[in-house]
Every structure is written in structure tokens, then in C-alpha cells.
Length: 598
Image 1 (spheres, rainbow, N blue to C red):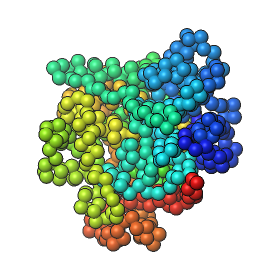
Image 2 (image 1 turned 90 degrees about the horizontal axis):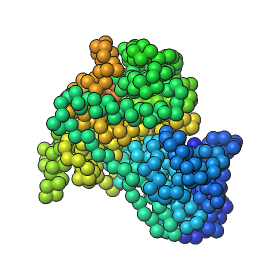
Image 3 (image 1 turned 135 degrees about the horizontal axis):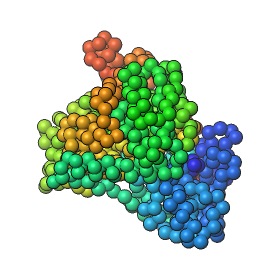
Image 4 (image 1 turned 180 degrees about the vertical axis):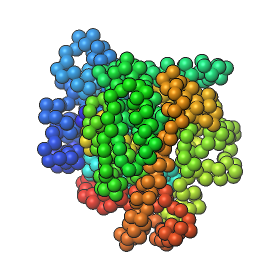
């Protein structure tokens, strides 16, 4: 795995630009890195490697150079294909395999890859950059484009180091952030920087850019089948997904978070490896004792070797690390458990599997009442209206939708200064693009493409990146996303947990397992709010915070006053603004502002 960056410019760039970008890639003074320039300094590829012996992946002729960040789960299949083409391998690294795969297949190589990754390839034979992300967006890929300039990186700081970029807040995206507690893809919180979408590729050749998608979700339609058939189909599909993620592991390690989804993941892994399984959980004061007992119950059910790590860190002590790693103001309530996971000893072992912060909790419909997305029924109405005569949503529908936002439009208008990007319009576009009609498919598509990478995979990625950890999330695999959501809803209607039980009853038949008090996202949000609400209030009232000119100072003061006097509870809103302030202080205030390109 290697964090990487690169650029293509109309005008050649000097060594100082390359070194500036390389400096942002390095985390420690003794980090190992390399840089290669092409076409007289108009193009460059840089990487930070985890070990001194690592290097760029190249083909036999040395004309194709690849950097790869992440994990490739079907590396055995890819290696077998490359060797069958009589291509000699020097290291067999992911980057080297992709260099050979690009030489053999070009863009079609993407259908041969399964994993959590982003990568970039330079082909010297035709002066082409090719880059792509995995299907679910586990690993990010950031892009900055301006006149005659393209800069990209698997991390944000190197992109911001390129001349012409500015570490400034993209105020139009703030409307999304205040509505949904995320900057949904392809947007970022930084002006002039976007993300390549999940399952997307980009090819850059001589200043000409082409972009495309190599995968889009298609959903299993359970109409006309009985519940047993539906459950068996889902079980088979998800089991194959877990098998693909554990094929190269002798003994999988599953992180039990005290919820049914992580336990079911462990059960599938145990089945795939014929009982070879190790599990671990974290013990601390944030999660209810019932959830701890649920993790132990799951471990006993699957006969795994289980260990529990003790952690006594307070949430407040993690704030510095969260601010350091979190470059997009991700929800603190989700960053906190992800950071604990990343700091655990077991997380550093190869092939650790996690439910990625409980993405199935969201995908199976068990959203908190304040979650950003509307109900499935509302999505169906919005989709029908969007497809019929392009009519705008009705007032009733808009009110229902706005009731699920953190700040509704009126509150955002009172709180926020600057241009806005209406938060509902991108949702309508996605609903129009949903590949299969029907409420479950539409909701699943929006969840998977728009919010899942940011709200659930994003915190895990941000927390694990500083330690170069590569956890696997089989239940966030395209197979799970495509299948589990409509199946669970078809089986259980408004009771997703019971639908999940029907799918996995052969794994977990005991009533005690399903009736256990599981950890929920509300647990984390409540604990984070209880520990940080006072700190958030104090920070938001500091002159530095009030003087930014982004928020209306009087509105912030009023909210804090109401919260302190228990007139109205503003926990979630205050934590959102607190995360934004931490983001400003770490990634805007402290950034060295690069000079404009001459």
C-alpha cells in the first residue's frame, strides 16, 4: 500500500513543486518515498511507501508505472492471469500486477479487480494517466483541475499543496454539510477539489479528459418469490462476498462491535473458513455492558477464539487525533469509535474484518429518526414525481424530507452566510438515475452511492489511514449492497432485524442472540454528546470561532444559550458545528498558503 499523488500540466513544473507535494505525502521524517517526472516535468507521479524496499509497479519494458493504495482481495486471480500471459513478475505487488494488467487489458482491467483501493497509472508509450477507485468508495481519490492543470492524490493535503489550489472552505457545499452531516460525493469541503466517484475511472491524455463508471448497482427483485427462496438467495450471495474477502486469509479476524451485523459477518467468515475464526471486541465505558455481552455471545456461538481489549480513553482525549485525521469534518460520533478501532492492537493484524461502523444498520433501514435520508415511501414518491413530467416535489413531501435534515432550510438560511447548493437537487438527480424502479432499490442506490462512503466508510478510512491499516468490509461489498437491502425489506417490511434473522437463521438460531440489547448509533451519539457538549459550546463561543464570518454569530450564541438553559436540545447541531470548527483550525488555519503559479 502506498499513498500517492501526481499531476499533469500544460507547462513544466520545477523540482520545488514536486518536493512540496512530496512533503505533504510524508507523515514522519523517515518515511520512504519516491517521485518520477515525465515529459520534461509536465507530469509526475509520487508515492509514500510503507517499507524501504517498496517501489512503483512497472511492466517488463519499464514504460508503465503504477501506484496503488489499499488492498486487493483477489490478488491470486489477477496474478494467475498475468503469469498466463508470459509476463515476468519481480515482486508480485498490487502495483506491479496492475501495471501488467493495464498493458494487457487497458480500461477493461477494472472488471478484473475486487478490493478496497485507489490507484494511478502512467503509460509512457502514449503519455496517459489512468486512475480509478473501488466500487464502493472505500479508498478516496481527490482531484483538482484548473486551466492547464490536473492534480490528484489518495489524500487531500498533497492536492492542496499544488500551486493554484487554496486550503479554503467550499461554501456551496456547506449547505449539504449542515443538512446531512456530510459533504456527499463527489464534493469535498475544500474549494476546487472534488472526489472521483466510487466505481469511476478517469483517463487524462495531453490535456484531454475522459471519465466513466465501470460498475453500477443492479438489484435483486424478490417479487413473486416466497420468503424461503428470498432468504436463501440472499444468504448465498452474501456468503460468496465474504468468501471473496477471506480467500487469502488462513484465520480471519472479525471485529465484534456488539451489533448483529458484525456478528453475522463473523458467522459467515467462520462458515467460509470451516470454523477457523478469531474475534475481538473493545471494552470501554462508551458502549453499554449489554453490547459487550452481545459480542461475547456471538463469539461463543461461532466457536471463535475471542479476546477483549481494554480501552479507557475519554472521547475528549481523541479529539486531537480525530482533527488530525479527519479532513472533511466527518461526524465525531462516528469518528470516535472508528478511532478506537484503529488504535487497537488487533486492528493492526492483516485481514481484519469489520462492519465499517455499522453500514448495514443504515442499509437495512434501521436509521435513527434524525438520519439524513427520507423514508423508503418518501423516496418512491419523489422518484415518481421526478420521472413524471419533471414536476417539483410537493410542499408536503418537502416538509417530510426537511424534517430529516440536521438543520432545515430556514435554519440554514439564518445560520449560514454565502452561496448555497440546494441540498435536495442532487438527491433528485440520483433518484432519476436509479437503475431499477421501486422504493427499496431507489433508497439503496442513494444510500450506497451518495452517503454510504462518507458516513460509514469515510470515518473508518480516516481513522485507519495514519497507521496504514487496511481493514476489510465484506458487508459493504457491492454484493451486499445490491442484495441485502431489498431482501431485508421484502422479508420484514418495517422490522429489518427480523428480516436479517430470517436470512441468517441457519447461522444464528438462538433467540437470545437476536433479543440481546445491541449497540446502536444513538448510543455513540449520546455518549459523545454527553462528554463533548460543554466543550463544543465553549469552543463555538470563542472569538476565533465567532469571527470567521461563515456563521451568524448571534444565531450560534442563541443556540448555545438555549442548549445550556435546557430550552431546546441541540446536541447534534452543536457537534456538527464543533466538528466544522475543528476542521477549520486544523486544515484551514494551519495550512501554508502556496504561491500562485507564475
